[in-house]
Length: 296
Ligand code: NDP
Image (cartoon, rainbow, N blue to C red):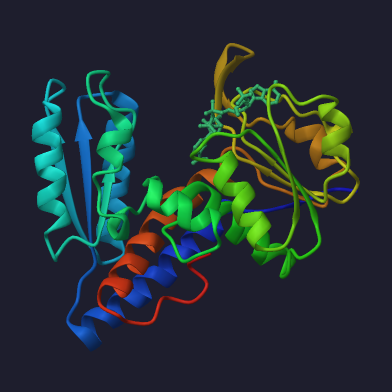
C-alpha cells in the first residue's frame, strides 16, 4: 500500500481562507474586527520567527494584530500588569504569550493569569479542565489541527483505535482528550510504555508527538492506518540540515493508508488553528454563532 499524503500546507491554507471569509462577514454585518495580542519576552530567535509569522498571518486574514515585545529582564509584575490590561481590552479577543519564557518568570502563573475566554493557546488550567470534562473550551492549536485533518480524512472517528505517543500538556494529553471526545478508543504511550511497537501496531490512528527523529519505523504501523506526525526534529544528513518527524516517513508511507509529511503536515495547521481560535473567541465574546468546522 502506498499512503495518501495528507497535505497540511494546503489544508491550513483552506482553514485560513475560511477564517478570512468569516472575519470579513463579522466586519460587514457586525462591525467587529477580531484582535489577537501576542506577547514576546526576550529575544529567543526561534520565538521571534514564530511571532513574526503569527502577526503576518493574523493581518492576512483581516484581523488586528497587537505585538508586545518586552525586554528579557521584564519583571513578573510588569508582565502580569500587561496581561491584565489585555484581559480588559475589548478590542483584544485572543492573547498568546510566546513560550518558553525567561527562567525568572513563572510560566504557570503567567498563563493562568490570561482570561480563559481569551486563552487562544488553550493552556489555561480552566480550559484544560473544560476539555477534560467534554465542555466548551479553547483547544490547544496543534492537537486541534491534527483533529481537523483526521476528521477531514475519515469523516467519523467513532470506534477507531488511536495511539498517541507522548503525554505532554501541549500536545499528547489534549490530543488524547480530543480523540476520546470523538469516541476513539485511546491509548497514551510515553517513555515508560512497555512493548511500544505492539501498542502502535494495534492502532488505526497513530499520533506521534515525541521529539525523537524518525523513532517510529514503518513496521510498527498497521496496514492502512492513518499516521499524524507532530514531531519537528532538526538533523544533519549527507552534510545538509534537514527537518524530519518522529516517524520514519519512507517506510511508514509503504504501510499507512494516509500520512502527514514533515515539513508540510501538522506544522502549518498550528498557526491556522490559532487564527481559528481567535475567531471563535471573538464570536463567543459577542454572543454570535461559532464558525462551523473550526472548533472541536
Ligand atoms: P515533550 O518533550 O514535552 O514530550 C515528549 C513526550 O514523548 C513525553 O511524554 C515523553 O515521555 C515521550 N517520549 C520520549 N521518548 C520516548 C520514547 N522513547 N518512547 C515513547 N515516548 C517517548 O514534547 P512536545 O509534546 O512538546 O513535542 C513533541 C514533538 O512535537 C517535538 O518534536 C516538538 O518539536 C513537536 N511539536 C510540533 C508542533 C507543531 O506545530 N507541529 C507544536 C508542538 C510540538 P515521558 O513523559 O515519559 O518523558
